[in-house]
Image 1 (tube, rainbow, N blue to C red):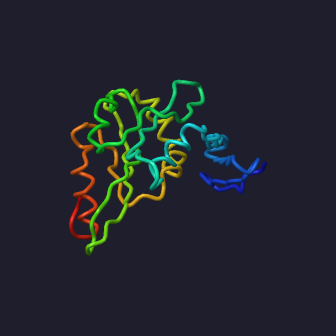
Image 2: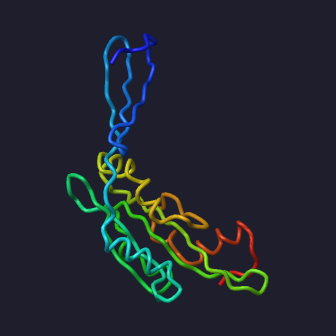
Amino acid sequence: KKSDGRTGAAQATARKETKVVVTKTMAGADAVYAAPEAQETPAAVKAAVAAVRSDADAAAWCLLGYDDGKAPQLTVVAQGEGAADEMAPHLTADALLYALVRVTQTIDASVVVKFALVSWVGEQVAPMRKAKLSAMRGQATGLLSPHHTELLSVSSPGEVTHAAIMEQLAGQGGSTAR
């Protein structure tokens, strides 16, 4: 492909529907950056998320992480029927995790189901792994959407509590938290 002659000009073209390739020309040198290939979400992960969203299921939260493969896949790390505080033993310093938490909130005498997204970034995650998995964040957050609030980039188990989620929801509107 020919450059348009402008230094630093970027051109994006779609290939194979799921891959975007960006070609950047700088001082006569071409560099090609490719977005990660979209991966099929494993059935166990879909089932865990569906259980949290289901009114008929007792699941209150699910915690997702990535395996150690060359092309990391989302996996179910843990699930629970209690409050978000139950996740604490699974929130390790060497993991990058995402959780969907189901809570109820009372607004004007009506009990409303709400969902919170938790983005856990352990303090000991290797920088290269953190960069690689951060590029894949869209897959996890897309799967866990929609949600009403997010605990973003938390790294201490004490930050992931039912009280913290309810406080954040209360700040977004609504009255009595439960």
